[in-house]
Length: 280
Ligand code: SIN
Image (cartoon, rainbow, N blue to C red; front, side, top):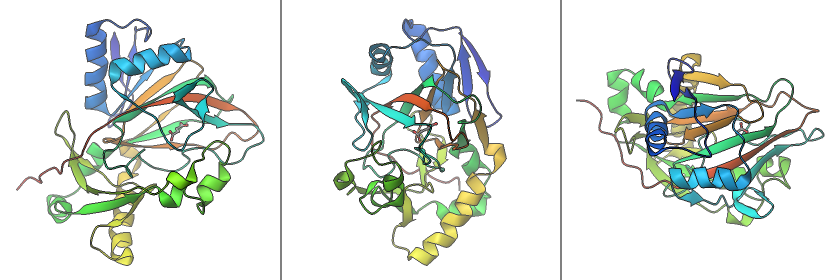
């Protein structure tokens, strides 16, 4: 198995393995690469839904997303789909999946079946690199803070987003979940400090007004979306991306109107998140 970095801050491509028949050594190499680099990519895979599920089960427990339409006969696999005549895409803004849950999902694996001739790339950003680049003084300022995350404004009945992707996203009545997490968490495997707020689901700093929260969050979002913390993945049929939600943001570009893009996503359970302690 050959591991190549995809940018300075985030991601590796792993070549030379077939995800249908992983050795124990390959599996632990994949897990380690994911924990260290935030996202791992594979090319030229040939995965039937049962085979993607078998790989997912080797990585961890599967989380069934309550909002996504699933693949017929496979409730654990969500469809990430945009038809040629549809305008809105799924995930078209910086976000980290499931931060609205009390125990956010560890990550997701997205497998490409059909991609547009050009466009439809996905951006990833490292929240470890974004945190590291803050000044020591600022790190101390945000160290004790927590933030409120919600699914209501995204997946709820009144949400503009859920209306735009209706038929692909549903179950709006389940959009009741809010959660409070530390603004800086420790990665559960590496203990590396990570910025854990995101433009998709974070609504405010716990105990602060909306206006106060907006000032801080706007700064953090502008900082964390700097190009040097990012990479851009170009899909081909058979490509697989697997990301760690605790350590990364992602953003599905919507620049391919008139073409079909179809992927299968499986999400993996996570656990409670603990605050990182700022260096003195
Ligand atoms: C997502 O946000 O899960 C979708 C990402 C993508 O379609 O590239």
